[in-house]
Amino acid sequence: MATCFDIAGLQEGKKRAFEEVYNDFFDMLFYLALGYIGQREVALELVQDAFVKLWENRAELRKATNIKNYLYTITKHNCLNHLRHQEIINRGHRDYLIPELQYQQEALAGFPDSYVDLEELMKKIDEAIDRLPSEIAETFRLNRFNGFTYSEIASQLGVSTKTVEARISRALKMLRTELKDYLPVIELFLLLKL
Image (cartoon, rainbow, N blue to C red; front, side):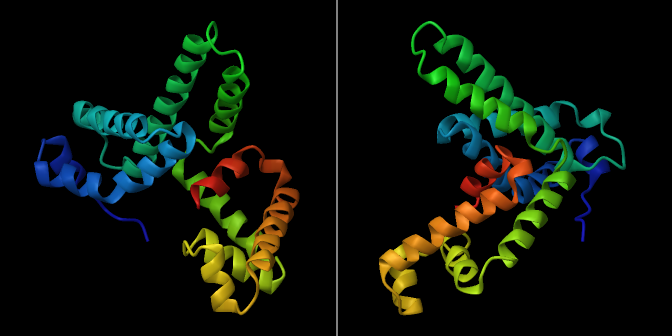
C-alpha cells in the first residue's frame, strides 16, 4: 500500500511534511547510495543533496508526484555523476581504479529508473531465492536478510560453519546463474541486501 504524503504542505514549505518524507525514505536512499559509492560520508552527502533538491523544487511538485520515485531518481543520478567525476579525477593517477569505476557506473546505469521497477526487480530476486533448495534458501536468508554470522547460523541449524559457507556460496552461484540477464545489477543488489 502506497504511503500518501502531504504534497500541498510540502509545496507550502511546511517543515512537518518535509520531515515525514525525510524519515520515510532516508535509510532506503542512503543504503542504495552506499552500495554504489562505498563511502559513508559521500553517500550521506549525495542523499542529503537529493533532499535539498526536493526542498528547492517543492513548488514545482504536482499533486500526483510519486515522492519515492522522485528521490530515488535524484539519488541514482547523483551517484552516477559522482562516479563519472571520480573516473575523471582518477584517470591520470590510478589506472587500476578506472575499470572498477566503470563497472560501478555500468551497474548503476543498468539499475531501474524508477522505484517501482526496483521493487519489481526485488520481487524477481525473492522469487529466485524461493526456488533454491530449502536448506540453501534458509541459510542464505538467515545471513543476508537477518544478519546472522556463519557461526550463528551453524549453531542455529546444527551444522558446521563450513557447511554454512558452502551453502551461501552455492546460493550466490545459483542466483547469479538464474538472474544472469540482470547482471551487473544483481551483483550490486545482493551486496545491498547484506
